[in-house]
Length: 371
Image (tube, rainbow, N blue to C red; front, side, top):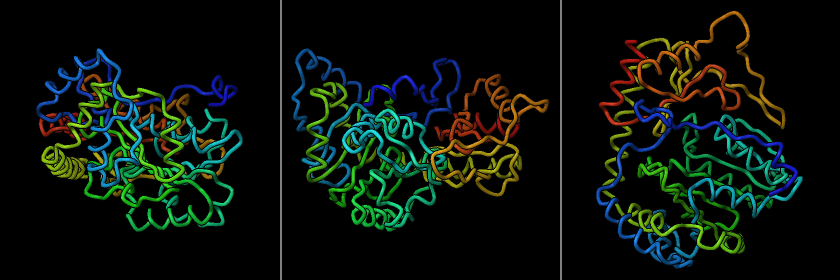
């Protein structure tokens, strides 16, 4: 981390509502957890009286089986974001360059800058098509799959092609698979490529965001670098035990995928039928809505490229009332919290809503469609 960059970087807005009396659709986490988690955590809490085995053999074996790679390539981390930071620390020097998708997870650009490096913003749908010539001066390329907040899932063949071109250019590819567990697509960890780092989060799919458990997957000298650079005992005993247990709950994962797919499409159809929202297709446990859209698609997104900031088309100091502000106020008054997506680069009139269980989703639709 570059000392001079710390003071210049603020915090990135995220979902998550501290008032538990409100129904929270701002955070994209599973409302359910696997049966038996509580007893696993309680047993592990007793073992937390001692330092954990820093080799984390049980966790690594479970993670290797979970994503389909050799356990020796797994690097345990306290959450997916910690895996992302570890990859940035290992691959970016001050003054370096990283391709960052937009609109996408805001922490990418922040973490790049914290290393003293520079983000080059590329539309998320174009990242997988970058040519070798445009990658030669780039140290790292980031892909979010499925992308947050749009829900796009790049085809595996496009990811493989990008990885091939990154290898030719001598560029590292970071694939953030925080939401991939909600899909049937295989992890890029199966590629076993020493120019690819995969970052995984366990807390979203298994409904335990406060647990902070995740891992990176990397091979060859890159994997050795990440393993050497990670902090000793960086995953607590309860997180390691619960994480390993959850990764073995295949029936829970299958049921979650089926439920999220069914509920997501049901919600999207209802929101499109209302006519006040443009709703992007999604492969993730959330939907991106353009407020005041024509109901025809995902809504317009700024096509910013380069290092400059996207300019907003909404004048929030003008006389007109902003429809996003109105919607955020109306939903909160109804006891529902949704995510203001205007903090994502290039989105000026959007909100994001999580896909929860049917009863909660029905309440959200009541507010958004009938309210």
